[in-house]
Amino acid sequence: MQLDDLYRRVIMDHYKNPRNRGTLDEDAVTINLNNPTCGDRISLQLQVEDGKVIDAKFTGEGCSISMSSASMMTEAIKGQSFESALNMAEKFSSLMKGEEVEFEELEDIEALSGVNKFPARIKCATLAWNALRKGIENQ
Image (tube, one colour):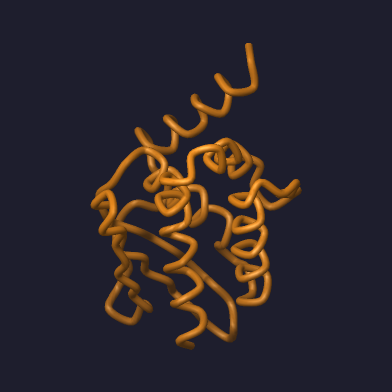
């Protein structure tokens, strides 16, 4: 099996079986973002405590890339400090620029590495990560 096929399967698995889809209680930090270019939208909710992301959930609509990226991101940031979560967001941004990046935290994220070959889709992949940054920076 080629690596591209494997990556495609990982992306489709997260799209068809999203992890952490849903909502948290009203105490959660809520960030709503959309990508007007393609219509993707996300509502990210973070349960934060003492500078840590305790839990993360999302709702929204969009392409397989935006929704699978949100699924992968929420999996990766649970239990992470703000600093660690922002570091992951920075790594993801580098990945989208075509730079070589190691994701020890969650290997599935690497499946999105091919998105950088399609500049119009980078905004899809980074939507959830931008919501994460915004949510942490507003704490």
